[in-house]
Length: 167
View 1 (cartoon, helix red, strand yellow):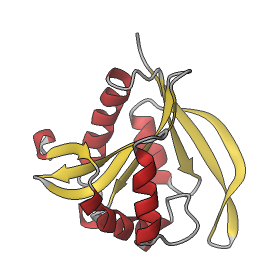
View 2 (tube, helix red, strand yellow):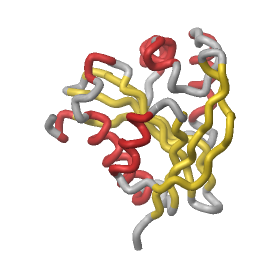
View 3 (cartoon, one colour):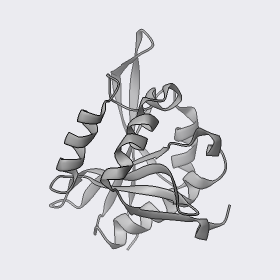
């Protein structure tokens, strides 16, 4: 995968249906904290709030075609921290190295542009691929929130990981 093929851009209103479809896809839905399927009203309400909130979300494009969404949520400008979020919505492109490129770009963007000192990631206990993925980038396990997620008729732990800016 060529790093130049992958670009990040601002979300447009015309992206909302695609984002809704991605987040409602069963293979993606299970890895998000949302408990209900989304509809266009949810997406439009969310879109109105992202400009003036603690979120900084972007569309992932491969050769100018939208394939996912990523960015930062829960940004705290006082302590210079934010949590990372990545969804490769086009599931045919999973395990192709796109997530690696996106995470590299987000880490650089978070530390340089958003002036973050700490980047966090929430990983569900059953998501072993994400656990290995973030550890590969030197994210460190900080805390386990025991049985903090209800999925598939049981409680699961949520692992909080973080990466600190190297000065």
